[in-house]
Length: 79
Image 1: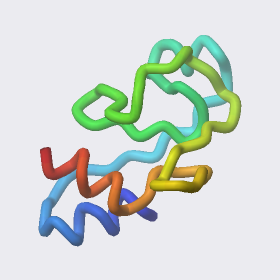
Image 2: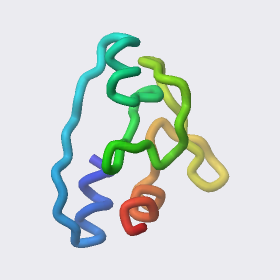
Image 3: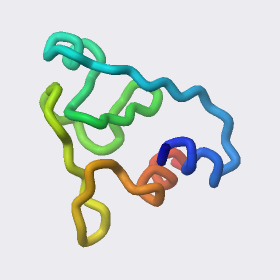
């Protein structure tokens, strides 16, 4: 899991929860803006898009990926 890899690289201890979201109402309640959504202290550090259960894309430098890169996660977790 990229989140755990980023945390380990920063030598941080944090609780990580994976939640399966199955409805638009649940996505709205949890702040999920597509899958996967990574929340840090309850907020989406990669942009507050419309709540959705659809797939989500992340810009990683000059490419697009289905999840934030470890480097992007390290950046948001270190701040």
